[in-house]
Length: 181
Image (tube, rainbow, N blue to C red; front, side):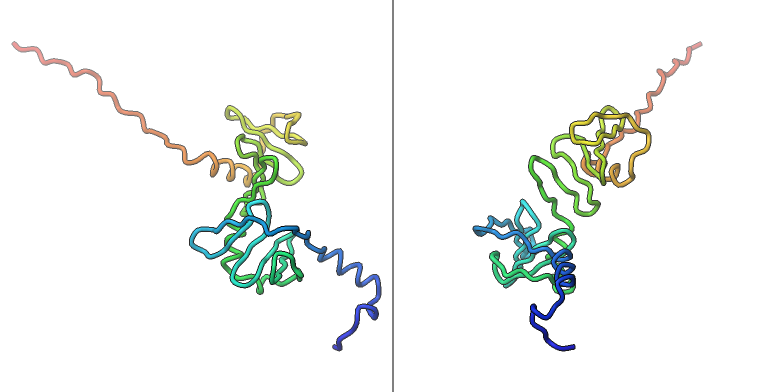
C-alpha cells in the first residue's frame, strides 16, 4: 500500500466511492439538540444527528459519519468508531418525520403519530375496529387483508399499550334458604 493523490485514482473507482458514501447534507446553523436522559448523548429530533463528547455523529442510509463540528468535515466511519451510547440512543429513540410520521428504530416500521397507520417496506397498513387494511399510500385506497407482517403487529401492540383484560367476576346464584320444619 502507498498513499496516492486523488488525481491518480481512476474515475470509476471515485464514482463507486461517492455512490457508497454520499456526502452528508450541510447544516447552515447549529441544530437545536435534546439530551437523551441518562446518557450524555445529545440528538436532533428531526434526524439522525448526535453529539457525544468532542464529536458529532450522523447516520444516513446505513452509513455513520463523524465530524469535529456540525459543519464538518464529515468522514464515513465504521461502527466501531461510533461510541456505544450513541448507537444505543440511535436504536432506542424515535425519529419524527414531517408531517407526523415516526420511525420505530428497532423494527424500521414507520407510523403516523395520531393514527393506527403504519408503513413497512413498500406498503402502508391501517388498523380499525379489529380489521387490517393495506394500501399503496398513506391515504389508501385501503384493501382489507387477512395477513399482516408480524413486525407491524408488534409495533401496533407496543403503541396501543398493554391490554388490561379483567377476568369476569363469578356471580354466585342466590342461596336457597333452608326450610325450617
